[in-house]
Image (cartoon, rainbow, N blue to C red; front, side):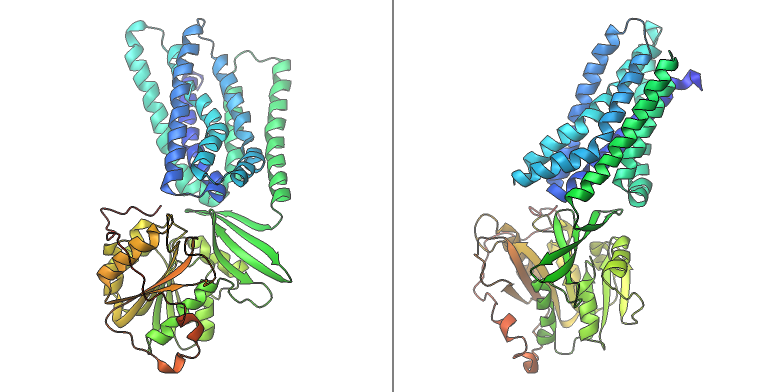
Length: 488
């Protein structure tokens, strides 16, 4: 085992580097989101930090004339302590900086650099130092360098799959951070070859510091976020369940990244998001609708409303994140055993591509602001939705966009795409008092064929029907799988 000290160190360092990169998005996402731009920023900063680490590590290796392995031990323990600071920096730095600036790209660059750049830099420096220590023959430099690089890369591959498929969905970000810190502490102690009583006291102190920083981080998070009653990491997202008071009313909300996904009144159990009430317009535009599909479950507030209001109708909810249904059951009162409810864990686009069943109405509620999953916005996706409808069926989508101005591109691109697919398209402004240049909820309804108007429901839905924008136009092009200038 001692013979392969350096190989083990390089492998584990590579693995932990990728674990940190993946959890970086989970730490940052509640404050800056998880769009492609944010991911691009995180990857770019991590690669920059690693490049600097390789360069500085190489210089240090050249100065390490005695090939002292203890220098790696020092790098690893500093990296362990830097990693332990992440939960504290989340509360005291990331959260505060995001509250000061609305430039999320700038915030993510600064936060990724300070919070994750330092441990990434230190871990990257391990490889060139290991090459120098391992290489005793100038003729074998290429072989040694290639071997060390390969081990680091293999470690990175293992760390990627381990973090994505096992660690994040099962252990949570804070536990993973603590685990990474302790592994680095163990590795540092394993490498150090000049142990003494003083050293053993030192490593015990280091472990106390690592565990103490973790405890402090959890404590600060609870102090700063007393409204959060559940903080869960799933395979796809970081999910917060919060309890908030608005005047005399108490609400329970579900947040994914920076987006408010669901909001219910704790006392009455009624859904608080006004835009969801527009989905009931299916009853007006599709008189005999009996079978609905909903893409995007979140806390399942609308499906629960649908089942209560229409006990004779059926709904299939397609949600990519299996944990959402469990959270909805535990925190929001979802009855998974309702015979009229079908739960399907699948990507929404994949479902539309291969589904054989026909639906009278399809609700799409999977968008998270302007960083929507582009694969559900395109002509091809909507054409599949169209083909999944019965005759005179509806697709109803909640779009978050401004109606006019610089923030209106989303709705205009989507409107053009809907017009290219559906026989009739309707646009509704959910909040009539909101300025058209303000980002807001907008409901798009695409009709296959002609609407089957239920005149008996006109009076009931008069207030909602009066918010239709009948003269809405767009000069934007149709969004396709090949060209989608919006989305995450």
